[in-house]
Amino acid sequence: MIEVQGLTKRYGTNTAISDVSFTVQKGEVVGFLGPNGAGKSTTMRIIAGSLGASAGTAKVDGVDVAENAKKVQATLGYAPEVPPVYTNMTVRGFITFAARVKGVDDVNKATDLALSRVGLTDRAGSLIDHLSKGYRQRVGLAQALVHDPRVLVLDEPTSGLVPNQRIEIRELIRELAAGDRTVVLSTHVLGEIEAICNRVIVIDKGRIIKVGDIAELSGAGRVVKLELARPDGADVALAKVDGVLSVERDGNRLLVHTDRDVCEHVAAAAVSFGLLELDGKEKLEDVYRRLVPAGAKA
Amino acid sequence: MIPVLAIARRELGGYLSSPIGWIALIVFTLIAALFFNLTLWGYASQAMQLGMEEGITEQMVQGFFGNLTVIGLLLIPAVTMGVIAQDRRERSIELLLTSPVSSLQIALGKYLGAFGFVVMMIATTAYVPGMLYWMGDPDTGVMVSCYVGFTVLMGVFVAIGLFASSLTDNQLIALAVAFALSLGMWIVGWLGSILGEGSLATIVKHISMLSHFETISRGVLHVNDAVYFLSVILFFVFATTQRVEALRWR
Image 1 (cartoon, rainbow over the protein chains, first blue to last red):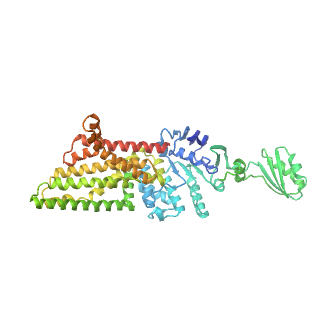
Image 2: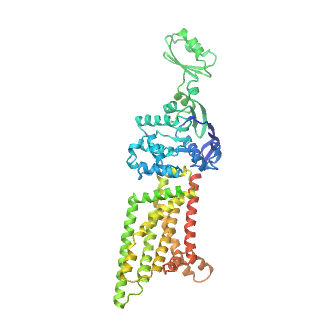
Image 3: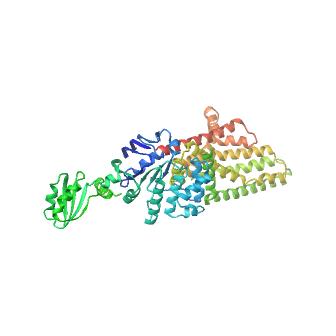
């Protein structure tokens, strides 16, 4: 559905993204993860057709965005981090306007549906200027949805929201992703990626450093956490297990770094040291910390 | 065409829901009324002294619109300064850039919306013909020609302002650029007068809006004047289209 190949964007001598390539299949929900300035928004804007690439291609449903942006945009909804709203319009007026510029046939029906989907029916008559940040984010989502696009590109849809609003928007995205709609979203919140996405693309300094299934990434058994009753000598014994790279000990707790999923063997070796607890699933947060160098915060 | 009209309608609605739109409308209406009264006062004094009622069209209509043009020159850049610059500043332009509308449709829609508002401003002077018919027997042809000429001239200022607004996200810079460009095109004819005769002087005089407007304000609508004004409008709308396209692929 989305095919990005060798995408590069330069601003003078500064390279925002370099040789970014990935594909997103129909119906997938893919999370874009990376620190500030990593190139997430740049990549999304190129896919949405509001920014040109210096090199490479972005295709949606086989159509090159650079060659036929209008055709792509007819089937793609884009919600930037800052909702692109006219604050002096009412919510309904703005969504109706968005429906018209997006070429919707039945404007009133599409507006009603979009407002209802994002839970803004009660606020339809309110001036956007009077809305809270959370409601403005919903307006931003509604404009992206109003033409019922098959692809949704959402840039930090929960940015700056309080926890309750985050949960609401997260639920909404999950609903939108149901069916065969393709969703690409970027977020600072790792939990959001785990809760919503099937796959994650980790990007740092304009380059993709990891693409993988959430389950695959967080369950790879690359780091095994142990708690032992009698930890003395356990670190030496565990280090001898095939596939173990290193062992860190902190009192009764041990962190075993491995090069593959050898959880079963580590557990077998740890039994004789009084195994109390074993966690072989590396959390996405741990994966992210491992992939993105310290100092670069999401 | 629907997206163009939608953008134009939103733009027009934006003026009517913003303080700057209402301030511009009220200021224009009040100054126009003041100019009309001053022109009327001058005409009445002259008519009483000379005991004549002739020349009402020339003195009233041409004098009125001549003065009003200066107000348009000052006011239109303020009206158009935010038409694209504000969208850029508030990032609402992103909606248009990621919607299936072309840069030309965006530029045309913005132009029509701003021009529509300016036509509303001009419409507030509808009492002028009414008063003139009540006072005497004005030349309808000259009056219509003056209205058409003035409206088209304001359309040129709007196109220049639209282009200036597409150059920056700072409304004050857009205002200054629009004013400088409009004034430049207005007074360039004076340079032609200084140059005297010759091909360069002829070219400069042709570029000047003033010389073309003077012909129309005399009640004569030449094809070359119409072509000139439409060409200038199209040129600046096209230049705006290129700027919007550049925003998309910058």
